[in-house]
Length: 215
Image (cartoon, rainbow, N blue to C red; front, side, top):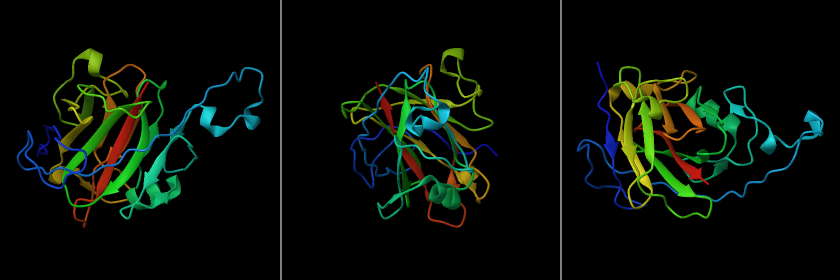
């Protein structure tokens, strides 16, 4: 059965209830966190001496460190990637070229909406940014919005608060160490790919919201 999914425009940054495009979904809370990036010429530097922040990165259940990513649990306590995969299963973050990067992952309980917040490097919210929400039997996307090796999904656009939400139905539930059925990306060339999104089975819609940063 096709899950009930759809874009939701959030009217406020912190909210617990609101009216959205998909009536069955409610707003989620999210916070943003600035992380200062850096660049350096690495052509002549031995790989083992290069800080992980400057290496190409794929974060999977095998675990790795990423100083540009902040992870929060349900209590707002900062956690590491090992905690994330132990709690949420086979989540994978594939880093792109920096055009649209995941900066924060935050565990959320209650709302059925998966919320993406987009900001620039100065911390200002970005409106009208196209964000894609994938599941296996979603409609085909136009070629310019396809990414992460995937062709299907729906597109939502961030509102004035920099937020867009997607309603998750029963098909979004999964059990670790497996992965959720959804993938999220920004429809910009070089975007990160955030895989394994969904709601933990046997919980009150526990899932991961995210903050993305664009240059």
